[in-house]
Image (cartoon, rainbow over all chains, first blue to last red; front, side):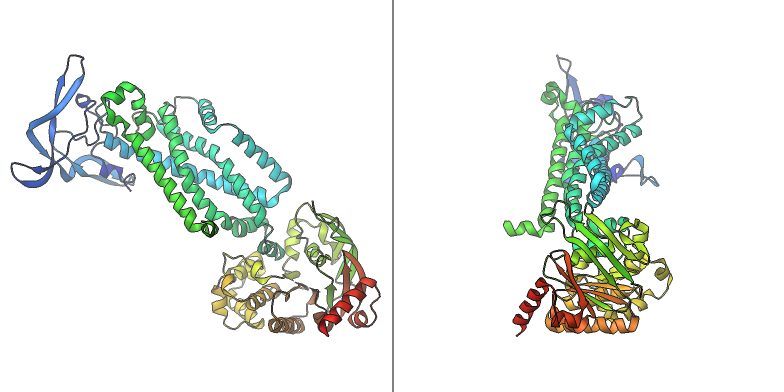
Amino acid sequence: MTAIFAGFFSPYRYDDGDIAYRWAPPAKLHFINVQKKIFRPYVYGYKVKVDRYYRRVYSEDRSRIYPVKLFVKGFRYKIFGIFSVNRHLFGTQGTRIYLLGADLKGRDILSRLIYGARISLSIGLIGVTISFVIGIIVGGISGYFGGWADNITMRIVEMMMMVPGFYLMLALRASFPPDFSSAQVYFLIVVILSFIGWASIARVIRGMALSLKEREFVLAAKAIGLSNFKIIMRHILPHTFSYAVVAVFLSIPGYIIGEAALSLLGLGIQEPQASWGNMLALAQGIVNIKLYPWVLTPGVIIVITTSCFNIIGEALRDVLDPKRKVFQ
Amino acid sequence: MKPLLSVNNLSVAYAGGRIKEALKNASFKLYKGEILGIVGESGSGKTTLASSILNILPSGTKKEGEVIFEGRNILKMNDKELRNIRGNRISIVFQEPAASFNPVLTVGYHFLEFMGKNSAMNKRENKGRIIEDLLRKSGIYDTKRVLKSYPHELSGGQLQRAMIALAISSNPDILIADEPTSSLDVTVESQIVNLLLELRKELGFTILFITHNLGLVKVLCNRVVFLYRGEVKEITDTKSLFLRPKHESTKVFINDYLRLVS
């Protein structure tokens, strides 16, 4: 949700930075106005001092209160690419608000996290969809027909699985020119990740198809003269879906992490586009982590998201697989 | 008289199986309008015979000999020709009605799917009525409920009736009944057998009745093929099978049956 309506939830654009505020720490959100004794969230502005090591030291400028308002006007964005809107969930006027701090170009990390979620999550979802469609179809066909078709596809699958995933990913990335536009890079990463992912799925689905094709209703479908295509689509693949749904959820984290890993190394999504991986690239140096610990938040978000998908997947498995319950 | 279907020197061996040959040199002829019983103990190759007539044996199975239907060898046909024969000219009713329906699809869907395969049937507009008529013919009267049900919601007898309705829906020349009643209780068994006889009278198909139940053979079949360990031991009319069994294994089988009955 937040990712779809990124424009609304984030106070700033992902590439909107103010160099004057670079490395600004997270703003403290104050809730109770002491003088007026009313409940209204506000922040103070930043005061900057450059210390003797030429570091920028920020402190709160207590002279003026900037109330945080809901549904304020800000930059224009488009919902679903159609409606042009300029309202945002929250914002301030007169100063910039950095709830999770700012990065080296003074860009709001919260806004970039929200925009990055778009890319990181959609890569996960699209990649998983593509690789499952390929995996299920290839697995279904090779399991159902057996014989030489099965042999050839399974040898290809084994070759895919033999190469460690991460190196395969790097090798594939390296085989494309580095100067792509960001849309091309995005597309490329999706393709690379799904190319790696389909093999193991095809293998499991093939096994299931092998046992399903011996079932009597498949024989009956054959005996009334249905075409092979229809038998695979209607009588074999639907029986593998309870496995597939669980496997989808359990493998989404792999795609998110895969994208993050590529972007972290600078091979994935390029600046100024935000993705969780390339934001985390800022946290590579120990100095940055020591001085500006808030650059680690993308990492925290990745951990939370991936474990959420894992937990959902585990729960789905318990719900969908009645056999497991018996043994527990 | 020219046979409707003739099986000549058919040998079948499953790939990697423990038994070397499921069928050895089996030959028999099926004539139009008769009810031919295929009898034999478990594992004698009855079901293998039925599957090879429709050529639905698993891939990798070794087949020799021929199955001639209308002058053509079914074992040598390509996929398209096979699809035209399966279900349209030769239908089959399997042993276990609950297993022959796909558990995730409704019974009605199976009918629609089968009709969808058949372009001539697909064009007819009142598909729903045709299906309901078929079910009523097969002795199912709450047709709407049955069509909406999933296989596990219906009893074995109802499912077998639905299966028969599906098998006869394209007005086949031959109906192979592969032990259609062995998983049903005796009352339902006699109902199903009577149903088959009635439908045969009405539609005039030929029945290849596979069973190990000699009682059914006695009341149902004109002629009998006796299978023993994959070999055809005896082909005779029903009466002489019981009165004058020629082969040793046939005698043993019939004696065992008679001892059980008395």
